[in-house]
Length: 176
Image (cartoon, rainbow, N blue to C red; front, side, top):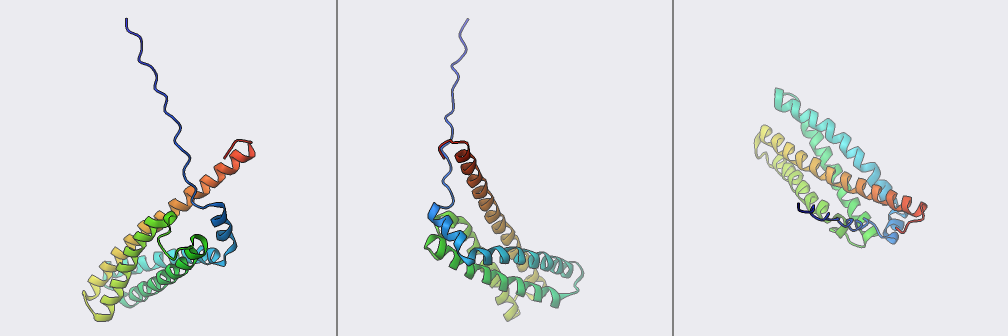
């Protein structure tokens, strides 16, 4: 009778690199740009939700083109605003205007979101694509926006959970 194979013990994964160094966390908490981002992000999402409904209504019924168009323009203006203020925030917190390692891939995908929204504005300004094509382009921009927003939400949630785990470990006297 053979003996059972030895049990393999998996080493615990190394702790995830925190999103912020202590100094970056201090700068994040001290800058007003954190509050600006905290206000603009849900505002942009609210405008997105209303605009999405208006765009889908137009595509389904052919009615409400002006309202749908205005809503996409407002959503795009908010996107530009949050991108500019986000670059300022990133400079304050990470000392880089864009593509800080902590948010590199979110920033890369943000460029696609900006490109699609800008393409919509160009199509609108030139009359290219026609009303239906413009609204389909807006939907593509919105799909990219949803993916990008999810990237940021997941990243910030993971950072919050990581900070909470470190705080618990410290409270229990374990090394963090």
